[in-house]
Each structure stands twice: as C-alpha cells, then as structure tokens.
Length: 126
Length: 109
Image (cartoon, chains in turn brown, green):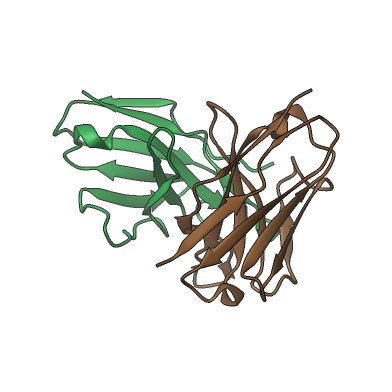
C-alpha cells in the first residue's frame, strides 16, 4: 500500500527557513518523480515543484522559484522541500504527491497522480 | 503565466447531471486531470488523461476534452458528490510546470 507522510511543518517568522520531508513506502521510490502541492487556508490548490526520479530535473512554480529547493534521497525513500526567505503568503498545508506520468503521442511529462500525503501545515507569521 | 479557468460554483439537484468546465490554452496539447476534495481532506483523483477513470471511482464520473476546454461530468449526481473540484494540467512551454484551476464548488441539493 502506497503511503506518503509529510513532516516538518511549523510556525516560523517571515524571512526564516524551514525544511519539509516526505517519507514514502509501498512503492519503488527511486523509479518515480515526486511533487509538492500546497493549499493556503480557505484557498485553492497550488502546484509548487516537481523532481525527477533521480533528482536530475527539477521545476518550480514562479511563486517559489529562487526561494524553495526540492530534493530527494533515494536511499532513505524521502523527498524534501527546503523553504528559504519565507513570506506570509507561503502559509499553507503542503502535500507531497507521487507522479503519474502523462504521455501523448508526441511526448511524456510529469503530472500529479492519485497518491497524496495528508499534508503538513506551515504557518509564516511574526 | 499559464492559467486554467473554472466556474466558482455549480449547483444541481440529486440525480441530475453536473458539468464542470476547465478552459486553458494548452489543453489541446496537454491532458486534463480532475481532483475532488472534501473539506479537510487530501484531494482524490477522479479523472486522468482527459477521460480515464482510476479504479474505485464510480462510473458516474466521466471526462472529456475538446479544443481548449475540458469537462468533468457527473451523471446522476449524489449528495455525497458535493465537494470542491479542481482541474489540473501542465503548461505547454516544455518547462513541466503544473497548474490548477481555481476550483469549483459543487452543490447537490
């Protein structure tokens, strides 16, 4: 059974840093891309970042590019999100999501799948 | 930046057909996926690659896509289908950035 468990959420002041973790089990972690998605209180879903199966490719939403870094340790079956220079608007529940590749006739690309964690809450407040 | 547009709300009576639309310029090239989210819970994938249904999702859920619009259809909507629904896709720039629509609140009453 696929399991994804986020941790590391906390209350942090603006400008500070925080690292989230996503520990997975039930599938071959090193074979799949992984995503972070967030949801601010009372708001919609926002895609944050994706990392390829081997960590060689990473892509970010414009809202976090240059401040957040996605990474993974396949020996520990764990993905991370290093969040620096945090802002009030980064307050959200952060979900990790297993990739479910989408393939058209011309190409394949990263896409969110059906396996999500339950999320971890990050609150940025002074 | 790339955007997907959904109506904020859709209302139907139980047993009626609910249709939720999602428009985006890259949808002719990129698949749409649909997620259902109940309050306080993680989203659940109900349709992927425009029209495929994951195992365990009731047959009353279906999806389609034509041009720049994708549609989630719930035939015979039930009270328990009341939730927020989000479309998701990827921009066509080759940068592999995901994007969600703003979400649609489906009311069944």
